[in-house]
Image 1 (cartoon, rainbow, N blue to C red):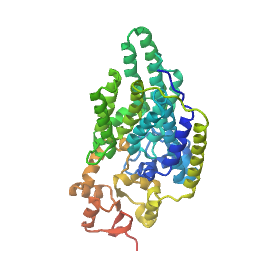
Image 2 (image 1 turned 180 degrees about the vertical axis):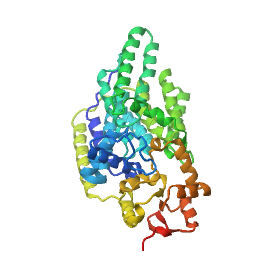
Image 3 (image 1 turned 90 degrees about the vertical axis):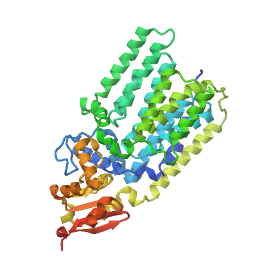
Image 4 (image 1 turned 180 degrees about the horizontal axis):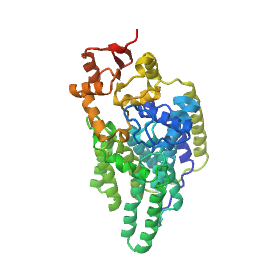
Length: 469
């Protein structure tokens, strides 16, 4: 199939997505963003990457390496430049760049309207993970890497070694780089099974690229530890307790339902024929999505690219647009992006999303109390770190390990004996949870505890003997 020139499509896509995503409130819906900003600031201030935990009082000097250090530094720099607006702008730029790379690849095979539909398909499935966190900053590397592999297969050659630069950046942004290291294997198998393939040559070229990719992944500050980190994470039994690692719930409509239904329709009707290896890849992505909700982003972004070529083969070629239309559209899109950026700078954010409301609540807690050990909700650990306080726990599951997370599950259920033991063993003086959390009700019924302060749906409880006059 003759490649279609992308023209102004990537630029227009970047501008439109940048303008839209900047105003998505959901970008700041995760407390992880807060502790990741503080980690980036710690790295900038110390000009080093921490090798032990600098935040939690329960972790002590336990080994912890900031494997997402590159993304965290970018987030901290954006925060220093323009606060949480800056962090949202950084996230919006990452989504815009992802869309630009995607549409450029999709236009190689699909007419304009179909390319846009595939882009929407990819982003709708990735939308639940559209949060200002390191994985979002790694999306451009993911789609650039996948596009490079697919273009190499379409041209009947091994991937360009220039693609390794994307892996070098990726491995220092987020643990999803392991997906990139695994993706070349099925493509190499596909190349080996192709009719008339020079198998020794294919094995040498693709094998050399794969070996170089794995060697490049070692170019991170933790070397072997950084390379093995994704295996350490997925091997943790306690991940099943964390929302994004749980299976997708179909109690409400989900984007992945459309994927399944569309796939069944296309397959049963015979409208699209997908090469066997790529069909296996799509099924593996679907299986991963059904197992862990966080993998839906991979199904959307990678799945759209895998399907572009076989679907494009079934569609008629369309004449490319000519004249001034696309150029004018590009100018309009760029003006919209500039106006959106100006509006973002001028529009205040909700203090409940920026961490400011929580920090203000912490100021109402006497210093003689807030400096003492706290029992906190899992999802509020990042808020405490952002406010300059040491949490009992936060979302760094790799730091705390299975045993600690299992013990915390019993504390927060709460099992009365486990809660009482935790309060005594850690000499806990105060707590902070969402109002409806069962620990709040348990402490309300515990003699010697009372509510000290509330803001929104968050409540601070304290031991009565610790309240200063």
